[in-house]
Length: 566
Image 1: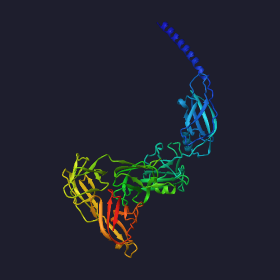
Image 2 (image 1 turned 180 degrees about the vertical axis):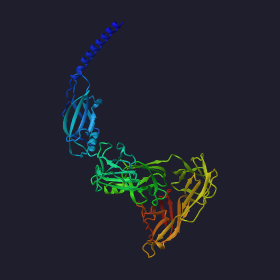
Image 3 (image 1 turned 60 degrees about the vertical axis):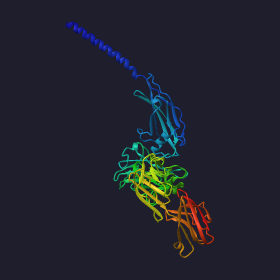
Image 4 (image 1 turned 120 degrees about the horizontal axis):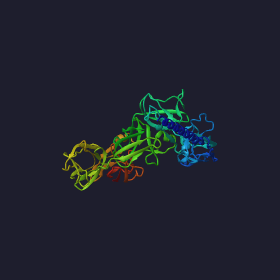
């Protein structure tokens, strides 16, 4: 048995030795094959065009080949001619087809952004070198060629850091808005609206990339490359303005933004606040009680004013910047009263304001079961008239969620009162009920019902003719005030002694001021007039005497017809 085992062992050792020699022989060719170099096709100098940012720069070459027919993959490297650190090129990317093709296609915008982040100025020739590396297993060969590229000015700025809303990740940095003048020319000015934490730091970057350039402050307080980090002493929302030509940065703290104007409940006397939501966006639900105009302003003051860019639907710009850069602006306007969600978006690249009306909830005032007047939703469960409703004391009135009276009904238990003031108003308890109510006197009424609070507010105006001599010693103080009588519907009349060359106007001080508007004739005895504090006085009495004056008011009290008869 031992003899047999020894013979088997020797046979096994001989087999292993033979197999090892054969394997070594198979490996030898791996060290003997060759990889040729790729050859770049002549690349023309490139002028990048901002008008065609997606046009492609194509770089082509003749392929490299492995003598052993192994696969070859290509890497394209673009760098400056005098680059001091070859390990950090401007661009490094695979060729098309996941690195297999002998071409790489690069959009203008990608090359332009890469050159900008590398610190090259626009509109000048930039000397670059293109290197094609062919790789096959562990072997590489290459070819390279120089060319010049002229990039366009699409320079951007970003900010990130522990003080910002996005933290330290530069890949999610907040973008600045680059400002343009009225001719559409890009300025070296940037701004961003965002919140900052006090005592924390941030820097400004020229790209959302760790390869971008970081800017901080110099010892003199100017922006400079690789300067010290920026910070603010007070936490809050800021408008941050950067002038990259002057290398300055300024902060304007926004404690509050609000809407103010004649379209709103308090007119031009007080703001309706919109709340900061984050990332340059403000929002609030606001009641617009009239069709009219408004502006946005900061800090309950006539500063930080925002208006609409003329001939746009919703583009927003700062008033002081627009005036300094020939941008035509105007107040915002709302065409229909109602309850709106207002969203002010001051993120780059386009500042906008959006108005979304509240869901369609309906409420109607119905007189005598037939005449339905729709109220406008101006708040959560709050509905109001936008025009005045001419009612008589014989009318039976109900408020209902359907125009035919088939919905939920609301009523009041008391009679709507009357008074002798200029604006007569009152409030009554409203509840779900089907019993009609009435008004105490014929008049043109405004209503506001709050179904959540259970109140119905009502009001009407008594009108007066004011008549005075502007040139006399007493002037306005010696005026006569002739109260007019309401005649259903929408008509007021009075008979009064008027004096030649005196001036006249119709008031319910000071909410209503009817005079001669831009398209009205202030000297005519019959015509049209406009409810506007800036309207002119009438100068239409040429002969002293007793006159009967009649005015017929439009339902919205915006205009009226008048007649003076001696």
